[in-house]
Image (cartoon, rainbow, N blue to C red):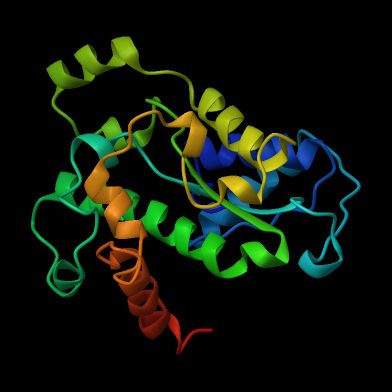
Length: 218
């Protein structure tokens, strides 16, 4: 399943997977946009999709890839996600975006912790600085400057694809940027560990909060 697939990274990843014969599912809030994406992909490729179930699949072949961001290191508050702020988000969109990306990392870690024993790989990845619609609302001067360091969304899709299919990514890497992230923030790492393990337990608390809020839909 690919989310955020109307444009940018998600769209490019969908095309890659579909063209290689994968059976992909996409989540969307808008039916018309979802249908437009489907038409665009189907009109340029064909496939022979297959299916796979977690418990019958080879080890490390079933994966959940969460897309985080460098802003976890640069802009997220201490600990990444604070339970208290979930009830009353701020009016600062940049702050809330950083919190959401930190939340991706925390949930990826909890998923790996809970289901890694079933050989399900769960990792968080940073796709890099990409040219995406998120920059459209920025001031013109800011867009001009930042464009110098932005890359095509296609390259961000390559990062996600590597996490999804590379044999080098295993359950051992569960939930962390691991060996690919040389210096993660200590207060983020503390959030990943439970209070019994000497951490703050924020990842576990965030998981439980998400379970509570989504239980009526599952």
